[in-house]
Length: 396
Image 1: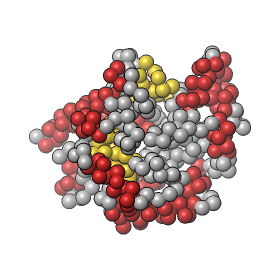
Image 2: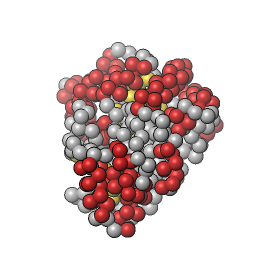
Image 3: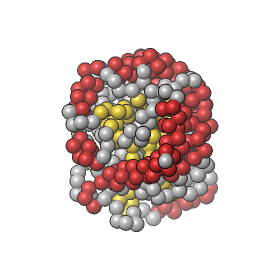
Image 4: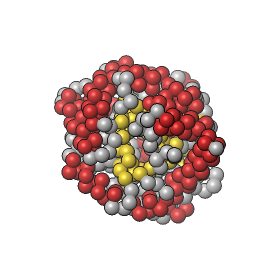
């Protein structure tokens, strides 16, 4: 047995075809209906339309990533209860259509964030990076978020000012465009004024309030997921710490433990993203994998090099500071146990999360950072080889 090998595809507007993805070695597609606004239900008709498109190319719709959680749900305001009901309807409709795994996140305002999307890697490929001083410079001197200075030490503010003073106008524009980049699949970006306004709507919501919203949300949706035969898999914060004054509540082992304990059900599981959890030095990913293996419903494998200042660089999949070998071994042992126990959730879908922009892709238009063809294909090939070696050693 092996993990189900999957690939994120953004639908008909993705620059890569399903035929190319199949030749890259994936058998399962990870996708979502990005054309449906957050907070609105996905109909069975729309779900089946996408499903037929995938199956016509000899693959299956393995995981939904993501059903967006509307900001009103996170803030528990206005029509949030109606939106939760719509969310449950979408889960039920996915279950009726045979799609049994949903990845989602609970990050306020910004889904993920980098400060440089075009870092020349040591082999000439292009990767992404997060630098804490660059984000602080953006926050303090470009966004000019009210009271932002309260969130930084004197040393951090000094580093941010030095970084800002060293940028020309083109560099400042590039940093703004990078931070404001839209979500994968939608490419809808904030303006500076729009981001200030969105952040301002969280002015009275701290970590405890956001966590309470998440726990309430779980208690609403997990029973619907159980009923529909759907496994929910919450994605960690990326990066896994507060940003721009916004709280984060899916960043650590303690956070993951609170989540799985909130509703004790196999349907209430995790997306184990090694790059997101792994960006924080404090997170021991091998220990986390061993602690939560029984509740991991989706696996994202990528690597980073990181430091204690909160900086990280996206590496090749088998390079960097993350122990992919022992994490994968832990999950393969878990898969073997699930099969032995007769569990139905033994597929354990995995995808190569992100990949460098390599030469054959660099002239291709419309590639979202991290979602190249050749970089992910290299990652999938390396991970498949590692998986085969570990599996043989476990099974003899």
